[in-house]
Length: 144
Image (tube, rainbow, N blue to C red; front, side):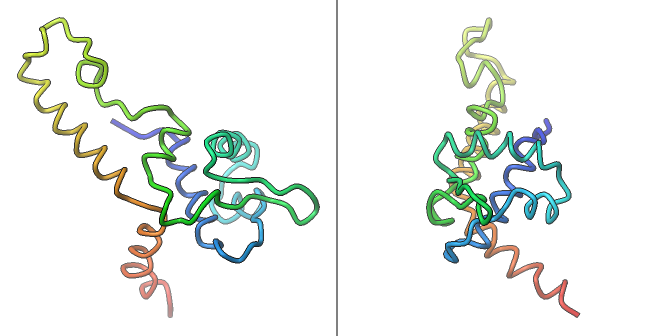
């Protein structure tokens, strides 16, 4: 199983916005694209979905860009994934109940555990917690 670029790039872009939260200064797509080495046009598509979900807001004009829709401690990874991809789904038999084996399949027990673990991890991981963890584990490694 591999996450799509929508999720991976979207989360990285949201973390960039979270780092600037509280300044009131919008961050331009070009700044995020440069920081993350991503395509501006692809980021525009992602931000359009994130804006529709209320996770970001846009500011027009020469000094425009994007801001988080709310505090980084209130935006969770599952919300970002769902805005960009739709509901997190590990297997149709678990998530949609479509199983030709009547729901009693030895493999289904594993998929249920994996699904619960992913949902727990993503629903409990806020942008702020990712930034805090990064600062605690990686920041000092980058400084000379």
